[in-house]
Length: 427
Ligand code: LLP
Picture 1 (cartoon, rainbow, N blue to C red):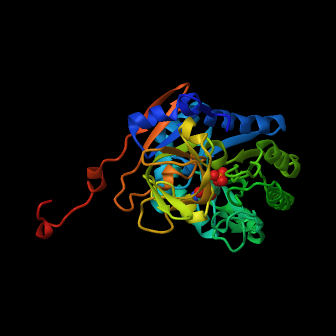
Picture 2: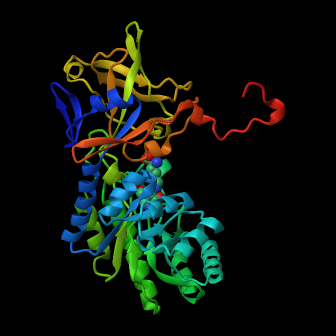
Picture 3: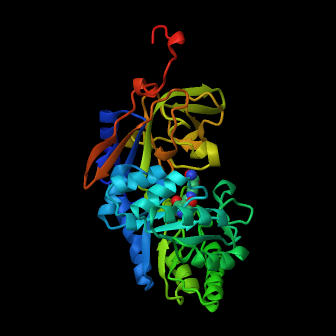
C-alpha cells in the first residue's frame, strides 16, 4: 500500500493526510478513499493494455463504489462505466458520464430500466438470455431506436474464487450457455431494433491467476471464429472484470498479466476490446476507520475488541469470510507488542466479526483502527441494520480531504416511514 504510511507523530496517513485528523473532525465510522490512488490504478490498467498493443476501453464497474464523486473523478479521466441497474445508470449520467461510454450488464433488466437505457442511448447492452434479447428488440422498436448489444456468454469456466462471487460456471444464473451463443447471435442479427456487435463474458470476481481468464477467452475466440465462418460480423469483445487484489499476503492480480491473457487469446481477432474492473482499481484505495468501544477481556482467551463499526458498514467478512487488514492509527500503539484478539462489531449477531485471532497491539476504548482494502464493495453494501446510521465518507485528493457524504442522522433513518394515523401516538 504505497499510499498508506505510518508517521511517528501523525500516525497512519493516507496519501499524506493523517487519518486521525479526519477521524477527529468527522468521527467514526468513516470511509476514506484516496483519489490519486484510484486514478493511478486506473491508469496502470490502461497503460498495461496499451503496452500490450491492445485497443481496450475501460468501463469501471459502478457497483464496486457508486459515489457520485468517484464517478465524476473517473469521468474526468475519460473512463466509462459498467452499470447493472437503472439507479447506477442514473448515477453515471448524473456524474456526467456520456451515455455512449456506458455498458449495461446484469441478469435481469426491467422494462423501465431498458427503456431508460435505450432512450438515453447507452453504448452497449450485454444481453444475458434469449428472452431478454426479444424484450430489448421490442422496446427498441417501440422507442424507434436501435440497441447496440453483445451477447454475454457463460463459458462454463471455474474462476477459482469464492462460490458467492463465481459467475462463469454453467450452474450460475449468468449469461447465455456457450453452446447456444452462436445460434442466438445469428438470430440477433435478424431482429429489428438490434445491432449485435459481439460478445461479452465475466467469470467472477477476486480472480488471482490468468488461467481462468485464458480459458474463458479461448472459448470466446472459438465462438468468434464460428460466427464469422457463418458470415456474421464481430466488432467488439467485452472481457469483463474480476481482477483480484491482495487482501492478506496473496500476490495481487497484475493488469499486465491480464493484458497478456487478452492478447494471447483475443489479440488476433481484430476487434475493439473492453474490460469492466471494479475491485482492482478502487479496493486498495479505501479504508474504513473505526474506534474501539471496548476491550473485553476473557481471562486467558483472546479478548474481544468491540468496534463502533460493524457488519452493517462492512459486510464482506460476515458474507464471504473475507480477510481485511486491520491496523491502529496511532504509531505509538502500532509499536507495542501484539497479541491475539477477536475484532467484532456491536451488532447482535455472532457473524458480526471482522477478524478472529488477529495479532494486534493492546488497544483501549477510544483507540482507532483502519480496516484496509475497503474501497470496493464496502460502503455500497452497507445497511442501517440495528438502526445504525450510514457512516460518513471522505475523499482524499491532491493532499487535502473533504467529506463526500455526511454521516446519516438518526432522524434520517425513519424519514420515509409512515405511521398510520390510527397508530400515531407521540410520532
Ligand atoms: N462486470 C460484471 C458483469 C460483474 O458482475 C462484476 C462484478 C464486475 C464487472 C466487476 O468485478 P470486479 O472487477 O469488481 O471483480 N460483493 C462481492 C463482489 C461481487 C462482484 C459482482 N460482480 C465482494 O465483496 O467480494
